[in-house]
Structure formats: C-alpha cells, structure tokens
Image (cartoon, rainbow, N blue to C red; front, side, top):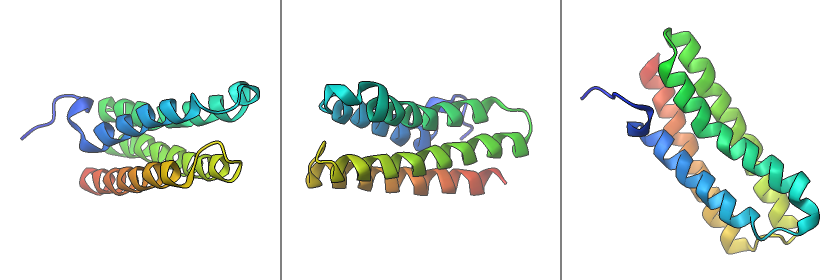
Length: 118
C-alpha cells in the first residue's frame, strides 16, 4: 500500500493525538503561564506532526529524514515540559503518565518511520 497523504502515517496520527492531549492539559495551567509553559508546550507539540507532514512532501530521503528528526527533537522537548508541569503541580501524576506513555508511543513510531525511509 502506498501512502498518499501524511494523514495516513501512523506516527503522524499519534503525534496529532498527543497535540490534542497537550491542548487539553495546558488549558488547565495557571493564567500566568499562558505566554510561558502553555505557549511553549503547545508550540513544540504542534511541531511534531507539522514536521512529519513537511518531511512527507520533501523530495529527497535525506531531506525528509531531517524533518522527521526535528519531530523527534520536539517530542523530547515536550517530554521535559510535561515533567516540569507535573513537578509544578499543573497536572497530576495520572495525567502526566498518560501523556508520557503516549509520547513514548509517538517516539517509537517516528523512529520506526525514519528507519523505513532510509
């Protein structure tokens, strides 16, 4: 089966799911974090599926993989921001664990997608 659109990439689908989760979680953060942790967490979360989508349309494998690697980097940044939010008590342990588990799944899927592309 040939993938015709980035929306068919399972890594993108799970990354999009994680973005939606991040938006729900960050909506509960204190208002004074609106231009800090809320904004930063949402930006790097959105960066993951955005980079997967952009990489999908690149003409060379190396160029595509570069964008998939950027998605992985944004994911790692988000993992830290989720940990920080937990430690600051903006999210509880169960919310953190659910988001962390999904982020681990996303990481495995992006990594697998990269291996298939090489």
